[in-house]
Length: 164
Image (cartoon, rainbow, N blue to C red; front, side, top):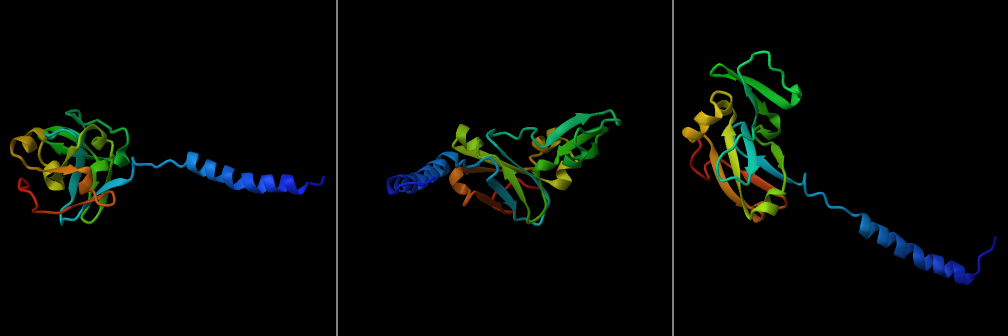
């Protein structure tokens, strides 16, 4: 089968156009996992980004007084005993010093301002969420999307009061 010059020219013209069209239409930017908060303290923290201006229960997976409770995903949770109850903490929010937790930028689609809440690990594993709220044993920082430089927010100690 032989092709004439006109057919070859059309093919050579269309191939780059089709390649560019597929590239542009198939490119999907994944913003869900691209934002993170780095723990730049000497403490192990539970860190959460929230649209709520009050501390909610996000890090607490479950609370129950039955000691036979088994978490659904034991590798993704930490089990502690506080005031006669088993508390299961979600490790998704757990950040060792100089480590990073991933957060969803979807919070900024709802509000311009969000809040970073941090609770020291030793506080989260010794006190109930009610005690932590009542005694303000957490840190809260107001942030905007602009505070995330290259999709990263570096959390440092001492920039806001409230951490015991």
